[in-house]
Image 1 (cartoon, rainbow, N blue to C red):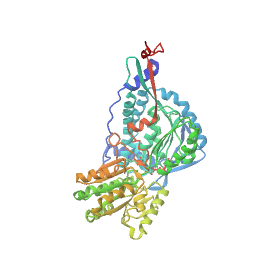
Image 2 (image 1 turned 60 degrees about the vertical axis):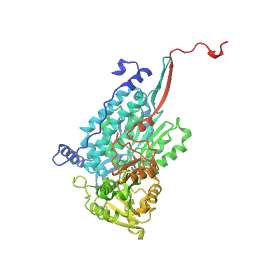
Image 3 (image 1 turned 135 degrees about the vertical axis):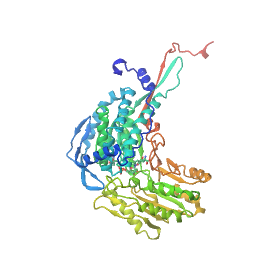
Image 4 (image 1 turned 135 degrees about the horizontal axis):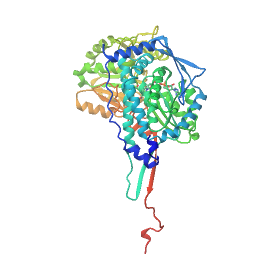
Length: 559
Ligand SMILES: NC(=O)c1ccc[n+]([C@@H]2O[C@H](COP(=O)([O-])OP(=O)(O)OC[C@H]3O[C@@H](n4cnc5c(N)ncnc54)[C@H](O)[C@@H]3O)[C@@H](O)[C@H]2O)c1
Ligand SMILES: N[C@@H](CCC=O)C(=O)O
């Protein structure tokens, strides 16, 4: 419509892009799913329907459903005999097709006025807040073993927030323009990157899969999106949602499959414009290495944006003595919600000796009360870990703690059971060595390491907290003494990209706590913020001279 009325010269595009006023975003309210609520009834209906069917998830290239001769399955982690879906796995030929189709779709998508692109994603947000909410929540619960609350804050609220806030921040970027004068008009033309963006998602957050593909697309890029196979069910419904919202074919192409099988041909393409990654540190480092090796073949320097692992801390000061319930709650919620499978999960805790005698029984009591099991039973606080590989890896850490001699003692949990689902009881391990592996390595499961420090060694303990792990994603401190808070904020300035005072280190909200970490935790481009979106544009500066000079000599050269 807009295009029919206006010739899309750069000037017209600029005006449209800069001066549309997008609706002010607000965080999507979290629905409680309390007994008797309408949202609980529609969620339960979706759960029942989804559990009774087995769908076939295709590769999606240019809007076409493509089948492959190689397939994998999506299982319920809490009942692994139950297959929810078959997933068609992409190979190198599918990646080549997707690159070609994406590049063909690129010009029209990039030329579409921002207001029109934005409308697609705002409509997606509305569809997700309504019709698709039970679908995305149920698929996240069944396929990724999230409780109703954990699915709601992820697949519904955070995903909706990403969609709405990205539009708001993108508009701010577009309206950022240089100074002009009566004689010259200067502009920044916010072009998408040259080529395609490769978006690679982890299993643990449906909303992250959404943001990884949608953020570059909003800025006019075309995307090859690789979901994690274990999250393919929710990620497939997400693609259906985007298509229903009006996303043109070829803009986001979904390539499920094995990481290197999909990744290597994508990274070998001269058209790689950027990588938008969330997942583990070793995977991202491997991709970065490959990009380095391929650097001479690219048409441009690919943008590398990666949010990766964490070894997130809670550090308590002695002045938190009257806040032990808040501290214990932060450790339990921060450490064990979604089975500790959040990059932000509290996985190492530092407690002063003076607090420990009262905190220890309180923690043990809280942990013993946590209900774990099938997430369709709404009384459960936790489900199962994502797959057999994670179960085995976590079990090996628990075994290490059990046989750790005097350096490690299991204070709570420690039991595992894989007979029906991949279940690991929430586990608390006290270690006496501040450089113990339990305090250093990301386990990504409900295992929390705890170190008790002498009160007089507050400074040494802070240094240990800063230096012991290579990661720097999230961290929380607990104290009442303001001087102690200031000291901890300073000493741990580079130890976390998201820093919490008297709160748990999980649950960042888009628009409120922009998310991301540095050191081995990623490039810290703050998902869901202007800082992230700016990575998906390659601005062109345009100067138009209204009165170009017509004589070579300058005035100073006069007689
Ligand atoms: N910092 C953050 O914001 C954040 C958020 C969520 C998860 N995470 C991290 O993600 C990890 C858990 O997720 P995961 O187990 O899915 O991570 P993972 O690294 O195993 O996999 C992530 C994705 O990368 C793909 N992949 C693997 N090798 C590849 C290759 N060579 N080329 C292309 N793609 C490849 C996988 O198939 C998957 O889709 C944890 O380390 C967690 O801390 C970080
Ligand atoms: N942004 C989420 C974590 C995402 C990583 O898994 C949080 O803040 O808890």
